[in-house]
Image (cartoon, rainbow, N blue to C red; front, side):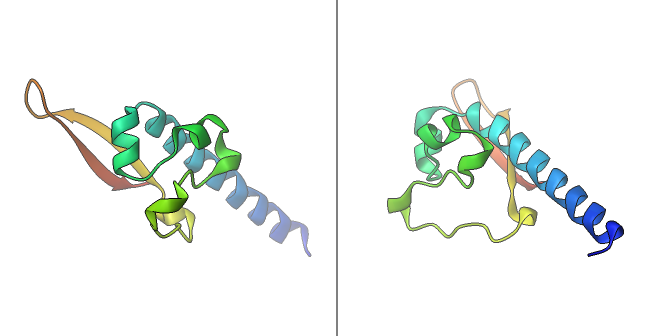
Length: 91
């Protein structure tokens, strides 16, 4: 393996880790009920990036297959009592 290939792979791993860490940070700001609604385990979030994809097994949800499908959650207050969440693809 050439040094250029090694550096490219290293850069990709760093980028992937950063995307997962940002997603983790955003998910940790959600309530337990919101996490349950989207099939994410609060316990696995507590284990950090190493526990990715943080899915609750019994939901039957498919696991992401690439870093391109990592999602970031941004809270918007639509009304005084209602929060909505916009899903957008990680950069």
